[in-house]
Image: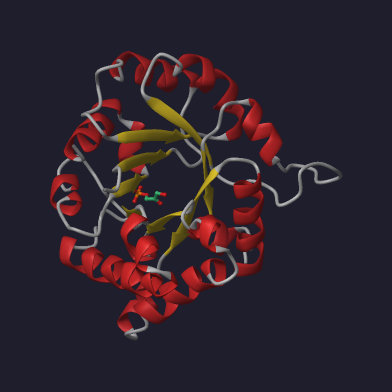
Length: 249
Ligand code: 13P
């Protein structure tokens, strides 16, 4: 049985005041039984988030990490630093980082390994562009992104990675993949990874991301291979994010 996970990715948004608002909305009883939720906040908010969210059921996530653990890497943040702030999840390979900050498959694998080596759960983001979808290359692109990481991991490590399928054309556009479109790709990812063993196929947690909101979450989450969500814009509104979390129950 897979545990649903709803993760809110604030991207380069949010404020201390928004953390306070989340603490007020997400009381200890806010989440349905058996649903996990996390807020993935910008680095400067981790300290305040750890304290502010302590009494809530929200776990903490970071948006990237460096492959190295310390040293001359100006502007970067390491896994041991994330550990110090109680971070549980870390995004790796978000399409914005792939497109804007040069995150390559090789760098992404390095980050996944570093995260796993420091007790962090990597959320590996994969997804096709509109051009790739229209050229009928969706599965080729998505499975290549998945294989670049999973082929290099051992069996125990594979079971610790969460995958987020985020079609690039659905991110921040208000254009959600239909539940059927998302289900088709996510079932394909699960089937593909089952060749590493049926147990991985069954246990793998798959999130959908891309304009998920309070109105469409229930329909997406009802699909058999969609175990949770990676939510951008709607994670900046406490009530909307709560509604999405409750839809996962
Ligand atoms: P939106 O929900 O704003 O489309 O963002 C999705 C996303 O990129 C989450 O990581």
